[in-house]
Length: 354
Length: 264
Image (cartoon, rainbow over all chains, first blue to last red; front, side):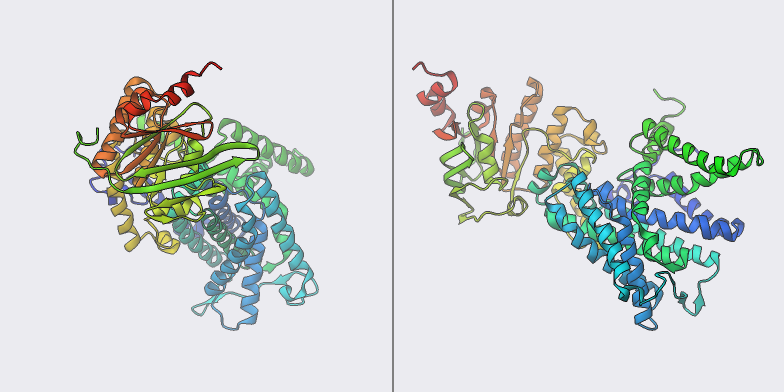
């Protein structure tokens, strides 16, 4: 099946504005979804589902949230993990303090609380931008971590600071097995990813990109800067908050502030830089790159059958990983999503590029 | 000029009275008063640094003058943010193309309609029902503008890849998308070759003629200014030195002195 639009004529604007205008993209999405829903749980072991696919999906969701803020609205943030922590702890507190609160409702409320916190830390964005804004959002990261570790109320006065997450039950079914947790994560991520895709192709997404590309012109054509920027912070933090709650409840099974430190923020920022700023697909590609590549390298080293000592392997992994990042950024500074786009453009012409 | 096209120039749409704007010791505008009448094409000319762009910036709220008032549609206007002024019906283009480079031509022009295409973000996230209908309705209007400016072929091209002349045209399209009552054009023909200038002049005249849009433009090409404008305002060193029809201005001694210099 060749990737080309030949013969796909659109006679209405409705068709032209559909979410995936090219038929091959639609098929690819359906196939990817089918593989993710039916094939992965059947052939994947509990280890693969629980320790690789679930964190990959959650990372992708957090990267998506950051990408809305940084890639689309052009507001650089280093507070991602902080907002994830807010989501996780808000969901935890809602669940233990309000009995019988359904998990999905708790997660949505947790996301909304993260959104409110995001708006608060987004307020400086009206005055400062670029690297200076990144430093301002760093304050969010440190403040949130400090608040969560200092005030016992948030951790329900748990002495260890590591709380096991309450079990998740919906419709009388307990989400305990890796497969069920994977499928729950997958459905939440797919729904939110489609919502994000819709937002970036409607007027709110255009306002974000307008602010990113030229804020003076955006204001002159009637876009209210403060409102639009704060909305970007709110929606981005909502995504990060939901990702944080999923991280605590469906991946780790524990709620701890240490899971959401500055390193996590950087990791997610690297994902969108490598994956592609301003691209929904890029968030997934970046997350896949950062989560899966170290595992691949590790397994590749295993092929040498113990000829290499373990400590050398783990250091070598970092070296290879680092050089691959540099390689990809030199080849295509706009990220993997852009590489994919170029490939698609070439495929449309192939095999007669002239 | 006015009667030959059969158009009638109406009431005063926007009036600036005794506007002064200074940045520290630099007096960008001193005591400038000017009226813009409905349906007219007003050209603002003057040597470099005369304050032409500053005047436009005052009109659409990028700067707030320290002294003087601006009255739009008969109502004196408080110091509003540019986004609010845009919502009142004043659109503009910039001297250096200020398009959204990462977006396609279509998206740039669609963004011009953002003030009218609202709806909350939840509806947009679902992209369903009333929002989708709105988006399609606005798309139809945007396509009319694309047709009008003859840029169908570059509809889906990111504007960063377009040649300069085309970018200027897209920028005009984005300003038109808001269906403004008053359109401010800051050097719409700067850096263009003769052919592109002719095209752009034709578009400016057609916008004025077909949509009845009032236009105030800054331009350095005197041939263009004299040909398309109904009235000309001349600024020099932040002061208004002449105001009248192209022929009157051309004969005005103060204008000739400002452009050619005088011996002291």
